[in-house]
Length: 362
Image (cartoon, rainbow, N blue to C red; front, side):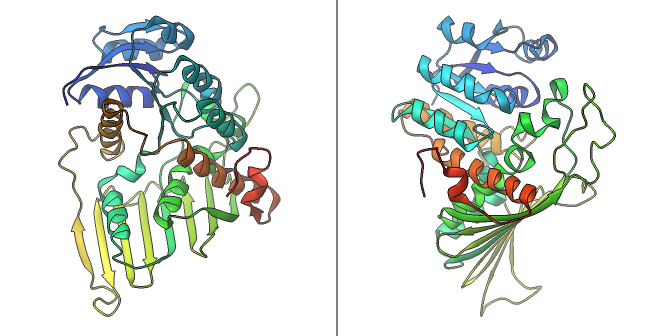
């Protein structure tokens, strides 16, 4: 697939640069335009693209330029709704970084504006990590039978510094359980093949960013939480998040248990384990090192962003629907929003509450 696709990048901070490097590693992709109001970020992207991309400081000018066939939007979360509405109106295919928007109500606005024809791919790339992708494949093959439990642990480093420290506040991000954890709620939804019914969560801000001040305000983002999600079928998901636990071997550990057995995926170790009841026992299971030979640029997400861009390019050339679209983006945000509410209220939150007024139902 060597046909040229002209890309524009809106938002050239850390993730924007990561997208640029992935696009450059794929034959046929050409970056024609970069856009960011921040001069430092734009200059960094100019260097990475060897000065070959035209520079813009607002997305409206880029959209009107006629220089691109597709876009990647990697701007701060709170800007997604406005930018996406303009992109949809311009009828340009787009990959939007996660989360789709910071609230379900804004996600619903995008879904309504997009209709049936707009091509909007949501950047929930964790499903493409080699070990996770292999786990999903085995689940779909029925190796462990009907999925009853999905447990995801992410123990990692604190939020990185971003331009103007936008990621330090819930009002900008949607909250940690939307901003960061939409990835994991997407995996729960995907693996169970089901829709969430209710959420119960406990969490807090106990360690990180407490001594920081921005314009007199202290950051309010959670740095640890437990979240339990119940699904229509009776399956359950659990997230164990800690963002001051970088002294660990694996950042993500995903466990799926069905009536026939158990699967595990470990990242970045890139190991998948499979145990079948009646065949295996504690301490004695099949273990595989998961690799994907398609990955030519590993980047900061174990090569998953590269695979995501391969699939996005394929969809663009074929004119097909996105593998990870607005529906997936919406439900990943809905669970995160419900979890944030559960912590705030110290009570169970029914998903129907966050769906109210969106026009979307289970």
